[in-house]
Length: 148
Image (cartoon, rainbow, N blue to C red):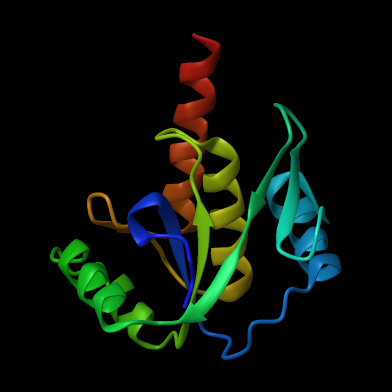
């Protein structure tokens, strides 16, 4: 069982059934699609270095998807975007803890994982279920707010 409460993290649903962290592949993907570099800081922590902005480390955890994860995803997808159906196909979730309410490093890492692992992101605080495109828009809004 993961030690991070779902309410303090982004949950990334993963279609992959294993819990392998492939830092070189994830780094190549992050560099190509997110203008960000990833490196292993420790076995469970990743160093996230955006091209613009300060770098940061975040711990990631993986666990089997729980019934409550899916219930929150379905509640968040009441409008029927289809992301809850995608979450149902994902046997695992990756947890990316937030260090603050507006944690750009955690959101960036969650977006990269969602893109690599082919699943939606759940913010259980809302709950809110969203994909990579929305995560990018949220990141842009955070960056804009930080500059103004």
